[in-house]
Image (cartoon, rainbow, N blue to C red; front, side):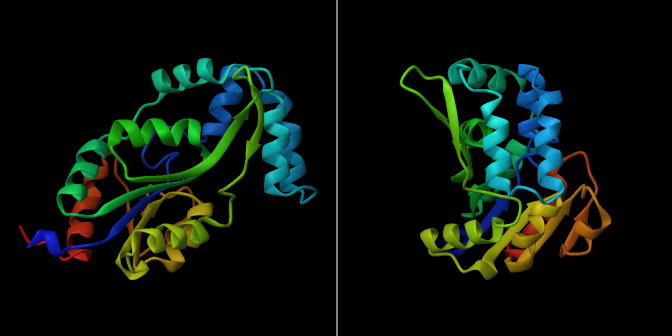
Length: 221
């Protein structure tokens, strides 16, 4: 019976699957560039630059850093929200595909994919020179286009978007909330995030999303 079930659960990363408020900020803290990065943030929030330019200016502060060193530090420092691994395992047992859509960095999404077994991941990729040192960034996911990425994923997987549940906590998750079959605001950062979600869940454990997901996907076991 479960073999006939198809669907997708798409997750935000920072604050939803992992204990990070921002993977960008984590790197700035780690490399000591947080104060310098504040000027770039001010330019973005004052409307003087777009997201791609903001990302480019931030990554310039990391130029010359060996990506492998950063990858190792990120892997050691990444902590998952309780229940994450069990939730992904259950979804796969139900024949539900899983995805991460993050406006953070593939540096973190790849670790989460590997350790949790998530099927698909989209984020922004750090570029390196021939010596493996950070030299730029390829911006794929901004703060307003997660719905476009979600459409791309369901098309690739041949899954109706009506069979998709989006799970996130912040403003940039709202666009994918609005196009999904259902959505969960998991510990939403603001009330205006919560109002756009089908379900709001305040919890320290991701397994508390399972009753809603089981009902949405019509799982009987």
